[in-house]
Length: 139
Image 1 (cartoon, rainbow, N blue to C red):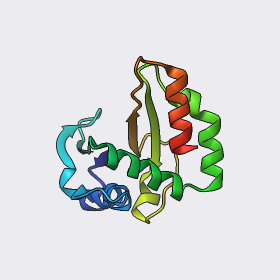
Image 2: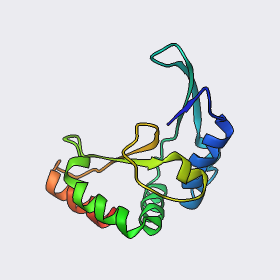
Image 3: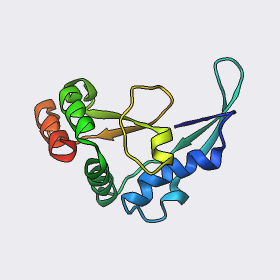
């Protein structure tokens, strides 16, 4: 997620931490990494990143998101599931940053969002099985 120069980084961190604490991730705010970068037009930006590696944290995150979606977002996600799952079996989600700051889970198409990439592992690699797992987790 990107915090633009016009945004308060601590508020953007709060929005991100909403997902981590809501999912019950232990020490979630400590997992947030900050990187300083320069935007396309030379503007300073802060990139905030979290990687959940424990299966329990990943499942808790998915459960938290699913339980807090509106019916409208569930319907939208079901419709878009095939397009959101790429060839590497990564499921892509974008959450509204402002809504997250207000303690709400809401999908968005905006590029100014909290992005989540959920890697779905199947052995052997199988898109159909990955799609079924995504539907089980988020649908």
